[in-house]
Image (cartoon, rainbow, N blue to C red; front, side):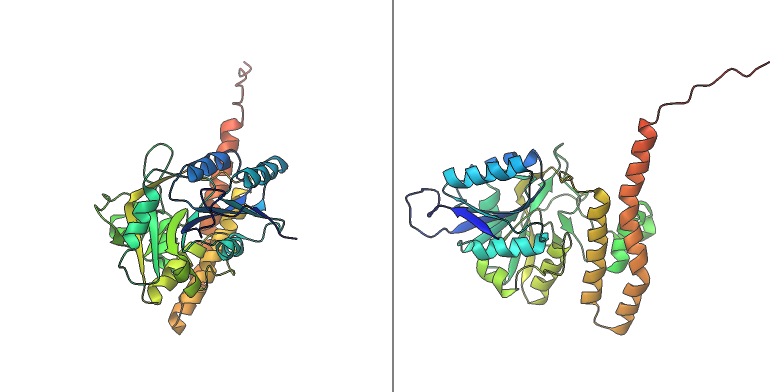
Amino acid sequence: MLATNARAGSGDPASTAPPRLSVVMVVYMTGPALMESVRHVLAEPWVDEFVVVDNGSSSADAAWLRDLSQREGRVRLLQGLGNIGFARAANLGALAAKGQELVFLNPDAFLTPGAIPALRDAARDRPSPCVVGARVFNTDGTEQRGGRRGEITPVTTLLSLSKLSATLPPLRRFEIHREGEPPPPYPVDTPTISGACFYMTARDFQRLGGFDEGYFLHVEDIDLCWRARRAGGCVLFQPKARIVHVGSTSRESPLVIEWHKGKGLIRYFFKRAQLKRHKVLTALLAPLILVAALARPLARQVLRRRVRRPAKRLLPVPS
């Protein structure tokens, strides 16, 4: 059963004015970063409503969210459906939101002052439907991988996952990640932005039918960007909207996460394939893409085990 907790109004609990901008956040076993992310959202004067969809939290975090929704007038909490997947949960959050504008934010991402107005300004007078992504940073201040990306195809994905496009000069034209390039001084058209933080009007989101719920975790943002461009709209990277994304905070196994990512990518490529040769190419590369996605967490596990393994004592050779 779905349970909701909310109080009417926006920033002022006594207010009856409809909210203009709603932040939608899907939560799943996030850990300590959740409270910090929520604190940053509620510190933003541009946020009129904050819709939190709890796909699954520890009992302590779930209780904390319920208490928050009771004492904070802007918070609207949806709980009780279990882990229904990110895309479906985000769609439920957008449906429950009353704001004319939406910002989707990961529960381990921290808004910085000025990020929301920068996202809104970038969308002004742009073709609809319009998706505006933020510039995403790691906690050490470096720009995070995935915040601005080129066209994602089976070939570019395989070369990127294998690091070949980043290490072999002849293949660098296939590299989709652009965080190593100097940031533009103004919003620019970019094929793909990060789902960690992006802006759309509620009308544009509804026009696209929201996220494709065939994706359980990951790739739904890539799909949304593609559909917005295909519908005659635009996808923009806004360098002035800065967020900090902790990343890898979920207690879910990295192998499970990468499995969903690999599966999602294959689904996306089949969805995009219009010609028979594109479908054949996708079918041929699909196993390699899945293996490449799973290879990274497997390699990290092996490396961690080697680091933890105590060094063997060398015994003296008997004379």
